[in-house]
Image (cartoon, rainbow, N blue to C red):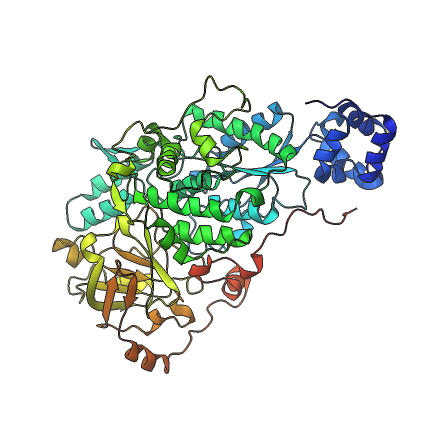
Length: 621
């Protein structure tokens, strides 16, 4: 409904209330009525300011060719792009941002792209997760220091999506995530190959002579055939789906292949939608509720999602004041089967997932079993349940003739509750015991069933590099369990994905395909195997992994949720344990080690917990 212009006296009153300037700018506002002022108080404190400050803000913006009509109270939308050719999964985000920008213009907003840190999981070493994670620095520019009424968040590689979400949660401006979506399926000699997952497989084949060096190098070009992020259900695809499940992304937008023209259409729709959200004051704090996080945890179980989602979701929840811990992941998923047959747990890839119905089909299936909170609001302004009834991302919500209902098109890729890919309770498990007093996780769907209950002697390494140095030694004394410490958030700032170390060549040649690995670090979402991860507290702070010796009997019992060894021996060793020297004395790595929380708490900076909101700060001029 369009409001009639108010009498000038009322407009003047509103102008005074918001500290606005007169002249041409007021004339523009008068033409739109008081509604424009009521809906856009944030950026009007910049572009409607009196005196020198207002002139500085408006005149500098006009050097980009903007006319005075751009400062008439329309929503100003920031586009936080992470495009970079040093982050291959993000390289195409420039085009995504342009599509988003078109949508903002079309809806009557003013789009202003700005750069954020492009952290890629492929090229950046060591501290790559310490940069966007502790997560707060990922969305650091989308803050009240800039004149923004809402933000669009294009993201790609796996760390960028949670970094954008925690930034949005902290600032609490209206926000829509637009993920850069996956590459096309990899193809090698007539078979589908998955990014990441087949890296590990090819490495094993090369070690045992099943693949030549020439074939190994040829396979490299077969895994990444287009722009986009990993097309397995790795962390990038997982977090895109999780964002959609949280309600922070348009329905159906997590799975389009990056080169599919429909992805650009979805990006434009996001640009249109964010302008409406500003008027609706639909902020992340209204969307990211306790029930939304429960939905995300259950969806992660249903898709066979990455263990990294555990850390990311706990960190995001911490920013909005929602209490979430490892036990929530275990409790929430025991009734949820794995429905999606994708690598690394299954056979297919994200392109197949998209054509089979994508995430809306999975959520519709979970809703049919009453496994989701269907009443949760999303960025569409509709509920989760309503989105599955109409997956069309348009602003015309009154037209019900051309709606598209979520459905499973291929039941081999997306199975039903009545014939699930894996049974209920095969998601991520939270382990406890004297080796992990504060918890550890294991992805059951990617583990070997016969190793989920296991007892074996430990072979201990104090770093991943120590394991790599001897992994190909034919005389290596190792038969069963590998324990690796000092790869957690403090022992290895950035907490990189090093836990799924290669099996020793000796075991591979003997036909062994998996072994129990226990580590306080992370594993790539594309990885697989019986790998216990995120052990807390970590070895570097005196966690029990620091006290394990070669030959100690490690007992893993996933069905009963424990990981332990003889307690008497651990108690004796603790008396002589000495903390390692602090490896970093300055710089960002030092800041990280001084403030980062343990994995069970989300590995975020403790001082960034809680939302700071978007109260406008003091003037700069």
